[in-house]
Length: 502
Image 1 (spheres, rainbow, N blue to C red):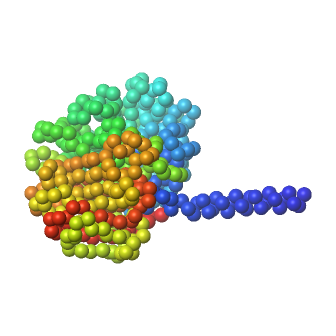
Image 2: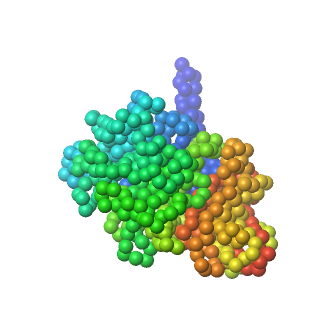
Image 3: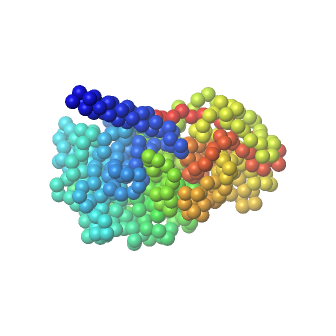
């Protein structure tokens, strides 16, 4: 008897010890981002319900609580005081029977317009797409009266139902001039964004629709409408973004509370990110008046998202970005910069050099005290160079991710064609990405964030942005200088190791 009890206790202690050890190893896995948000375990995709409430940034996200692949969509939840360091919270809104919890928005109903809280305890309100596989999508509501800790599904769901199989991803915000809430929501197959209004978040009136315009090669998803400042001006513009299967596009114009009016000079398809791994980007609701707009996206691509070689998690979020509008060559365009608070992750500068003139020079990170692929690398390129110039990061036997300037095309490029694609052939098919050079300066500024398997590149203070994944088999922890036969073409190179947020 005593032996049996001892055996049970011993097994229990061993299991608990194993669980603690497993917990200790989380965020130390190969390829795990160290300063991009990712859930502890399992699948994630779109960010949802980005809202600022009582000094706290809330991040909800599409999450599978059961396994490391898509399915059983539920809202995961994390919170932050600075948009850099995150605290995991319990699951917010779980799948119920046959209804998955698809993407949506969250707002703080401070005046209790729904009547679902009280004046003393106004509710946080989540509006999301209830998805019944191959049957119907409609807009549902859930609410919380304890600052997002626990959630109750509205007992009269759905709140907006067109009886359609594809009708999803509501973004809701307060439009002060009209004193009502506005919802933008997608008709994916029709390539349209519809706009609705409501006084109480429960009953919705159709206002207008926008589209089809621009890129209609994929279904439209995850609309986001936000007002952003014009760079170096007191003027503001409205930014409308949508996602299409593997990429995003945006439109710049005006919104009068009823309809979105595209700027008449927008004559081309505009992308918020020129890379392959930036999707479903949405902006934060209810930021303080002096706060710059903030957007977060899913740093992945539906073509290979299920196959990327990561475990026990799959999927991460982009860095938070601030947004501005700027008129470039007669057309309003989006300017994006990483949040300044990311600088707080910098350790003491590890490398600084005015010019790197040697062809194919390799900078060994270990030699300068960086023992991982978690760092920031800033440099400049002379645009008058006659050869393709730049750097290569996340290098291994296959080579790495090349970042630089192609003078013959006058374009910024990212090339990952030489990286490991053994886990999915489609990864190598989506491999070379460019953006036009808009500046007239003879210097091109690069700010590169490397985070084990994610690379984000901001060019010329955010005129162009690229997000790219790569999964080196045997990382050599080196940065390589590309084709610098033109003396001094890579200049002001600085490398900062970055701290983990976990």
